[in-house]
Image 1 (cartoon, helix red, strand yellow):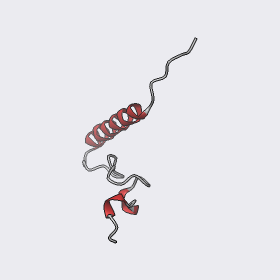
Image 2 (cartoon, helix red, strand yellow):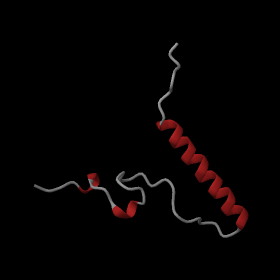
Image 3 (cartoon, one colour):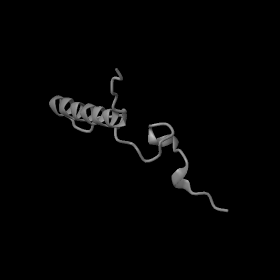
Image 4 (cartoon, helix red, strand yellow):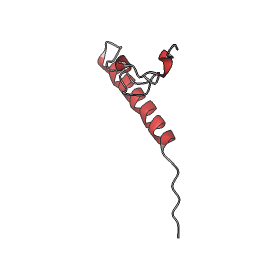
Length: 62
């Protein structure tokens, strides 16, 4: 029986046990400072959107 490699966690994915979800890299690609700041802000914005999408919507029970 052959094992499906897509379901196995990869150590080089950078995100633990979720294969194929490498949205945030460990290094910035742009060389100038302003470009790096903009790239970091875009990565933070994307991370915040993904975090918010994963949160359940809470409703106060009265």
